[in-house]
Image (spheres, helix red, strand yellow):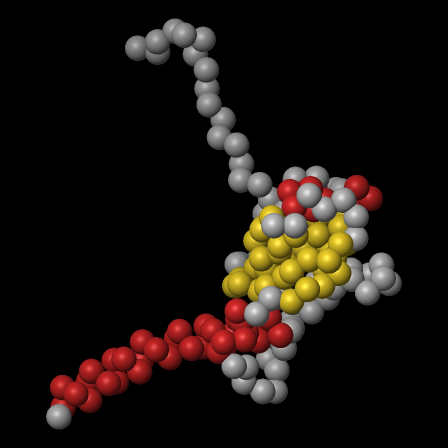
Amino acid sequence: MRSAFKHTALLTALAAPAWLLAASASALASGSLTGGVSGAQAPTPSAHHASHKAVATWFGPGFYGQRTACGQLLTPSVLGLANRTLRCGTLVTVTYRGRHLTLPVIDRGPYGGNGAQWDLTFGAARQLGMADTARIAARVVGSAPNTPTLGSPPPVPIVASTGGISAG
């Protein structure tokens, strides 16, 4: 009997973090976790798989060289998006015309007054083939630590060239 209890307790302990992760993702997807404040009701674990269609715009040239609300320096190559309620670092998979891209929330917005729920960086819009305001599918898939380089392309390694001369 004692070993059965240990086995059940172990399974319960292993299952609990998975449910909590699913619940957190669901809360993010529904927008009930905003700025670190949780919603009043516990979300259903299966709700985080749902994607929703929404209007999206893109931003960029007028903001290059400025810091986003989450602290990143905006350049043409930064891949990210803005949302008014999701926490900085929330990862969202965006689909537009069959192209998929997972992007971090790096800014607040949109504020264009046209009903858009998402504002993609120029780099993200370009990779998705989006030229103007468009309807996209969006799904919260997780989170990443918010750092000043979140959304920036990985650095290109510098390779020293010896011009064909051996160093030894």
